[in-house]
Length: 78
Image 1 (cartoon, rainbow, N blue to C red):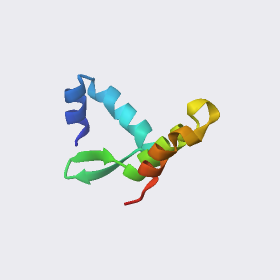
Image 2: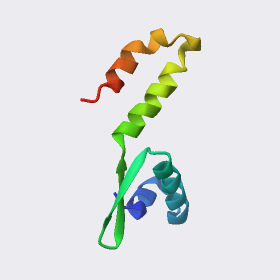
Image 3: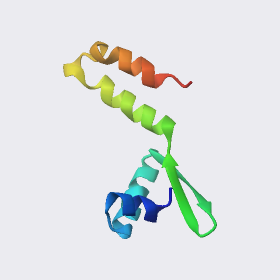
């Protein structure tokens, strides 16, 4: 989805959205590709899976076993 479309759907200014997309891109949570004059953004599922695994392993009051079923599900590289 183009940055302008994302900004419009979220009611955010385009320059603010571009800055936020840049942060997400550098964090490995999204990817982009050029399509003519537009840059299209999409989720980087491996990056998101890694982030969720990290968050879930550090949750549950230091007892990641409580979150293990969810960790197993999202860690699958299916």
